[in-house]
Image 1: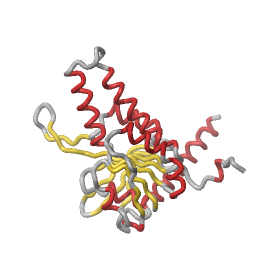
Image 2: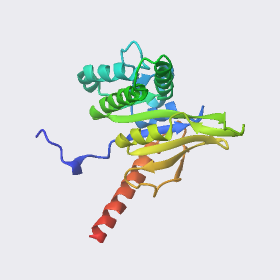
Image 3: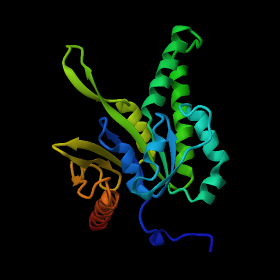
Image 4: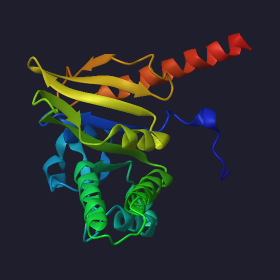
Length: 242
């Protein structure tokens, strides 16, 4: 039978965003999510996690790993190879340089007055990201998108911590995400903190899972369980309201 019953699926696919500061363990978290990973390696660190938690890392054969349009084309071109190898997770590590580059290119185009309509450059950027995002999700694997916290200063010179992707861009990405997880290294320990889940909305916001075993072993499964429980509670609430 070519069709799959939804009830027979062991767990919901992990379409997660991972956000955190430097050295929080974001790349290592990927190795706890799956054993066979395709890493869109925009920062040149993909080989560092190969073998961690017994995982095997593959990297797409694309000349420019910071070009979302080129990456989306390669993912679709190599879809059968991805299935044949048994890729369980497609990870973008990270989105930060992609967004920074696209933003800089959009500004440069407008400064050169390449476009009569100045908004066109930003529409091109949004479309490129959308194609890239859809290509990753369409293959039926788990998907992880990483970005960062970075220190800066506000208009008054006060130190602030910002995310490397704007709120508007995060909302666009959320259409294909079902969880946003904040990873932090604090007080000598690593913690995964739920920011948002599609199953539970903000009900799970702030729930923490401590990395007790190291290398985030077992933490994704604990998050799965929390998301599943929140989804069941939500369904029961809808049924009771009906």
